[in-house]
Length: 107
Image 1 (cartoon, helix red, strand yellow):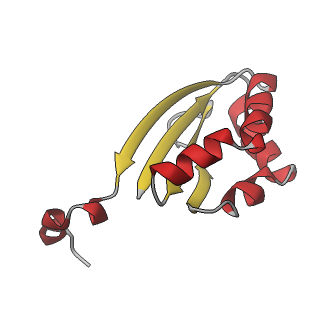
Image 2 (cartoon, helix red, strand yellow; image 1 turned 60 degrees about the vertical axis):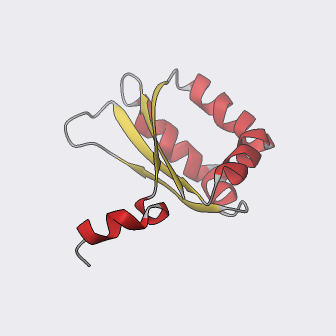
């Protein structure tokens, strides 16, 4: 599994307005229904009111690549530009892909 953290930052509440617009336009549900999507959720950092964190999860790189090639990406980019947002991206691979890490997890 791939986990992508995208921090959208703007001014005057633009990042939160962007997240609300993603929901209102139905883009969130369309992305969540794409093959290979395991999660697409926004969170608000307590210490930074001008940033929204998207945690985006995909089964593999192929599914993420298909998402990036979909028409939905154009709509997301259009909204991002409308709200004048900037991004910082982090990418992680699930520890489920490494059984050696299992011994460190408390279930």
